[in-house]
Image (cartoon, rainbow, N blue to C red):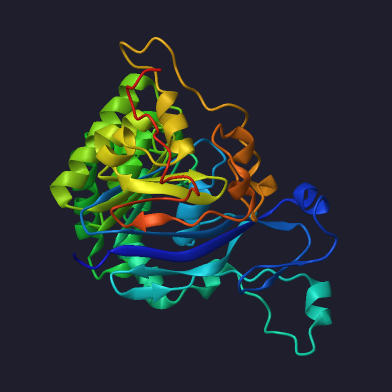
Length: 375
């Protein structure tokens, strides 16, 4: 098996949520098993996530809204906003190592230290030059908000070519030619869209332009975070096909974040199912869809309307707020029909290997139904 092109080890992400923090403690919280002291108001939302992608492979990260998908994937790239921060973890890209950590310490915490540490730096500032180069030349990103992902006062063509201007020695004419070629690949009128402002594009056009900007550098990895959000069904289907075609033609690895299992079936090789800030099941699309080993996965599959299925099997209850999820037991207990006493004893370990694993104490004795099975 080839070395993973992208590998995330023990990633932990905290978010600023004063309301959730008030219900826990008035003091800082230590991130376990090692890491910085979180200042009051910050709560660990993603406690420990690891995953990897092989060259040319498509990994879908799935789960209901609020399960931690975006925090995990954007955190691994160092692209979180000011209300969230990675507090632990290591990321590898084709042999390049990065620990994308933003240390969070309030003034009171720093005063309590006998030997105050050096002033904390924002995560972007702690990324080394090699990783910035990787992000600028080897990783393409599609964001949820196709319009908001652009600078509103600069034309599309200039923004799409910025990474080439920053990280290559190409002339401005060569950069323009590459951008025009990429716009043509994603089926946009080249000259007119090159000089367009983001506000002059529809959502579908803006997402196609963002795909062009991601492709212009010839990335080895494409990361798509809910890229079809807000698009009409027909437009979404066309862009999904375009993404799939571009991935196959270029042989890129891809992380595709979605809550739509139909998109997963159309695109992915492997699936990582998330719930409560943790990956609860991984496996091939075939294995996960037809032979799930985690009750949450089975619940997602049972919620999909399909011809010939007269009764759905939805997951009972509501999705918990990610900052309210307990980290000392299985988070699914309130919604799980198979919960037992052992589920209260700790966080279930992932049983299996890279070919397929489930984080459930009862995974070995449950016979769960896959997609399309009635009852």
